[in-house]
Length: 617
Image (cartoon, rainbow, N blue to C red; front, top):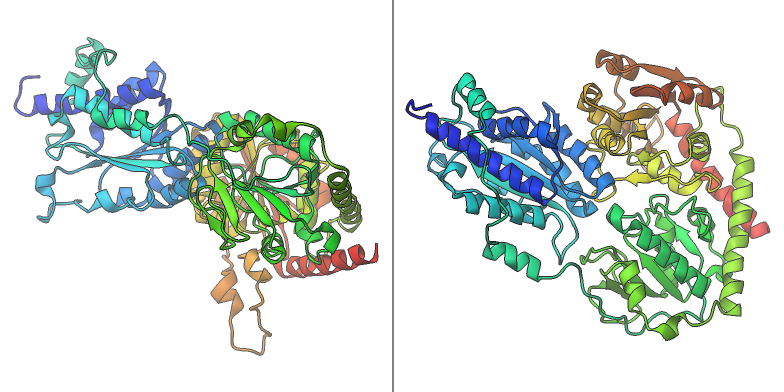
């Protein structure tokens, strides 16, 4: 190991080992590695540490790797590391970084880089990768410009601790962090010599327990463990009627039990009904009084459902009707997020902090459990007023009427002419899946149909949707990550979303969890059929080419090419037996063919009929 350059290559590996061991000391337990030479020291270090408690996955596509890590992190609440080489590899991390940013998901993105002296001089694969993710990350960390090997052990350990802390910053929601690490050449010593050094323990890194924290680390920890609560002024009146609007859950899994308990306490005190989004995670919880059909109820809202007070939890549901109802009714609104201090009020009335302005919306980022605990004991004295109970009863009555009506309208969906009715699928799927089995909903139509038409009688399960940026990027890879975290999951997706992430099928070689993919193949972008832009055949607009973009592709054959078995489900009546088969496969595809134009008309017709039925009752 005394040949020229070998010592630098060895020091590169030592530095990479030290960095990753420091991250593991902070809590890192999962990492995804993408191929590269500049990142060779990091790859070797990951291989050394895998037998020591680090779960390691590999992926050839950085975009897919980052979304797989995103699914893991969302389900576990802990940051997952993604390690890439330099150049355009880093740019492929951006879509997942955007979703992690707006979805409040901790993620640690580690890229290898060229030393500073090679920047701006035409050196190969040297790009401005320091800026690629800048708009989306919570923090950017840069190794020494001459190379990570030039840094002291203490500096490397401090850099690792700061990066890990920044994935869950005390004054901002969890999110992505970018750690960019230059490595100087020579990058690699010969393999036999390195294996010998690893075997005899000479590459063991020193203990990190005696080091002093850096100034930056001290500054991070000094900010506190959470966002401080400032009481709303005025506060909601628990003795007057109101509603709770529970949007998509974006808190960490560790906060979920306290959130549910706080919501139960709120409802026991106020009697306010909870309008629960399909991604709220609340549907199926028997102890809560939930309204699931608000999207249809508000198609033609009746005055008796109008509320002067609204407590909003997290981001708004996707329902445009609910958003219009909140804006038109002009109620007093209070918004509580789970650690998200950024404005979550797209209605235009929001304002951070506790200041009240007009009929706008006050926002707190303390989380429902902490905010509820800050209310005075007098707030919790007594139970719901008679007026609040009467108001809540009216919402419940309308909910029951509409759900019974939906059961009648969507009782069967075998649809011989069109294959599968997507509305019936949304209605029945929750009843067919085993209780507690996690479900991942792809954007755009599946998640909206679930919000409007899913059966509230279905048992509780974790429901995941990635609506931070509402893209179709990484759908299959995300679902693979969720399945790996939970042990099993189901993905409901459209054909374009699945095709957009076809590299996700490659995860089948590494998955320990089981994933069943239910594909709604409607020949293109079904969400666009719900826009009022389709023209008659005689007109010049080529809707299919400009919007729907159908792809002539055999999804079952594509999955089979990756070693994934699949079956086509001709009618919804066949779905239960096919699910029994698919749920017992490591990774399987069920394809259901539907008619997107017919289903778009069904949605429009059903909404009109629902409004008429409610007005007549």
